[in-house]
Amino acid sequence: MTRQRPRVTRAHLVWAVAVLAYLCAVSGRASFGVASVEASVRFGVDGAALSLFGVVQLGTYAAAQIPAGLLLDRIGPRRMLVLGAVTMAAGQVLLALATNVPTALSARMLTGVGDAATLISVVRLIATWFPTAQVPVFTQLATMIGQFGQAVAAVPFLALLVGVGWTAAWASLAGLLLVSMLLVIAVVQDEPPGEPGAVPPPPARAGQVLRDAFTSRGAWSGFFLHALTLLSVNSFLFMWGVPYMTNGLGLRPAEIGALLTVNVVIMVALGPLIGVITGRFPAHRARLGWIAGGILSLAWVGTLLAPGQLSAWQLMPLIAALAVGSATCSVGFDLARTSVPRRAIGTATGMVNIGGYSSSLLAVLLIGVILDLRAPDGQADLGDYRLALSSMGILMGGAALGLLLTTWRRPGRSAMTDTSPSRG
Image 1 (cartoon, helix red, strand yellow):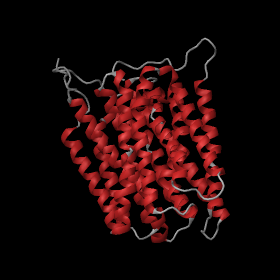
Image 2 (cartoon, one colour):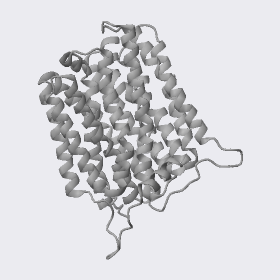
Image 3 (cartoon, helix red, strand yellow):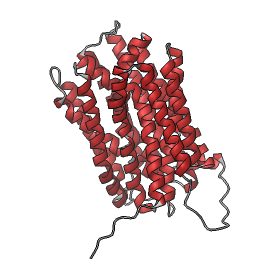
């Protein structure tokens, strides 16, 4: 008997192009993290001022989530993906030409605004194009494959930055984003073809959509799970990981690039497994957050308390733990998706995203302030980085408390039993 190959449908094609758009957005988002050392030289800034770039980008990204979610629920994911790519490309071009801090900060603000439109649009497309049982798997696959954008930032972008220069490296990212925009225009549609003559429902009022999202206990659980699993990941990958490994541990750029690439590979390997578990055992989604939070905490404690400088190989447990956090944070989207009406999925997804990125913003700023207090001359050593990075434990503890309060149920009641409409 001949085994049939899986059929590639229009849904898979739409999904693939949307994921490519997200991958390009991640490359633009993560690029400043690997360029932070060069940025400190180009703009002549110290630790606190350097952290301001991360704060501005993450702050803009977090602040734009609810407006982006409301706009997504009104105009649809295709238009939002196009707007996001164009806005991010403009940010990369502006940063390529920037020679002073205000211009560079404006560029990162554009990056944050465009980035805010991308992932929530991908999540909404998946909920619309795929059956409910397949949504967690395709969401995990999308977020994991999208994280290869970090590899783009860690390897080819960093090579261009070091070998060709600042302007060419950032301009290349702008070109990549514009290519993704053209593909979205050519391929992506908001929904599968409907019945002939069917009239689409009118858009829900913004006030009703906001009430749907912000009164949902499941959406708040997703918010705190996202924060717990992602804040230390973002702080490390987008801002302070490269300075810590370069100035604190003395690792070479090739070693750093290899570590960041391994991080992405592990994430991609874990993503489908977590997606399957999420779909089959929805009542245990919060436990996945607790497990990932525990792994992250243990890895950070072991890394920061280890005596002496660590080699690239000795950083592998932390790199793997960060991958676990990245792979698990998307469970927060599924908690929100199954807890709100379909009309509010975009807004609820944006709300969950605020959890991880607002906490990341606070962590990035806190680390920069501690580094400046410890090393006013900008020459932070390994001990300074260890103390500064340990401050993330306070924020992780707060996120864990929020997750506990929003998932706790009285005995006899099952957690997270809300279900979504038939297509999410």
